[in-house]
Length: 361
Image (cartoon, rainbow, N blue to C red; front, side, top):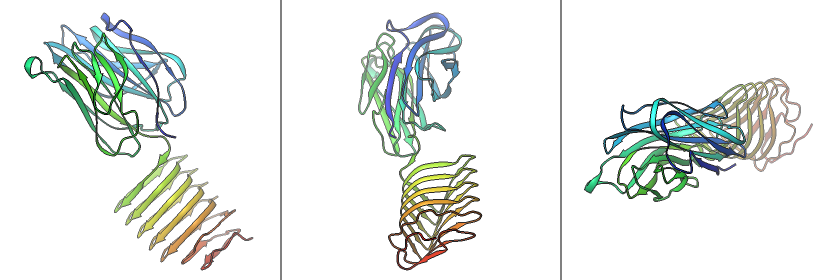
């Protein structure tokens, strides 16, 4: 599933609200699967200095803070935050922001997305600002973050002091509030790894602050590479839904759990490395093109299950299924250059060597 934009909202059609209040609320509607809600918050303090956001809720459920930044423009203190919630309730519900003290004025934006990782969804984040005014004023603010995982989207939230915001390079506005001079924004599509940016423009020239973050795609590993290192997925229900182009060069991939599950593997290569799937009910559903070059693939468990293999090649390497009640209901092989071994009470195949063979009892 790819990440997709779901919905946007802002705190009030009339602009800034608050008037010495400590809370701000408005409605946002979430739909779809593998959801995430991001909320940007701005507090404006004509006296008393910046105050922090102590919490944000959606339908009464607390969000988690990504980052925040305090700034000053025209001698006025302002704060900007970005928070998130995975699996927010569907339908129309209330977002509520609470500050540590009275904000003379306040604003907020909501942005929801689908197809986002439901565990540790925030890939990276950063903050930035440009508070200069007058002849040295900046007409745009660019926020950058270093994206780690493939197929992420970049999302952000900013405030422009006294100027209406427009979209800059590679940015789509979300939850814009013209009267409040605040807006969210995103990349409106996947970005490459490395430094990625969003940009907002304004006639004001003062940017008290903004927060940017990258969010991870749900459930899929497109390129997983272990070079002199190790990738480990561990849990009671450890699951890797799909792996495309997985390469271990002098490294190891390990999936461990009571119900370890690897649904689909395509282009899995072990070069002087190893892939290990371990669990009480470890399952590898489909393998398309598995190559071991002086390496090893190992599936271990009380009920180790390998559903389907197509083009399984061991060149000076080995594929091994081990332990109790090993079940290999169907093995289709395109090419066996060396050996494939299924051991310890394997009911269907003890070994395959040389020419391709189908499953036999």
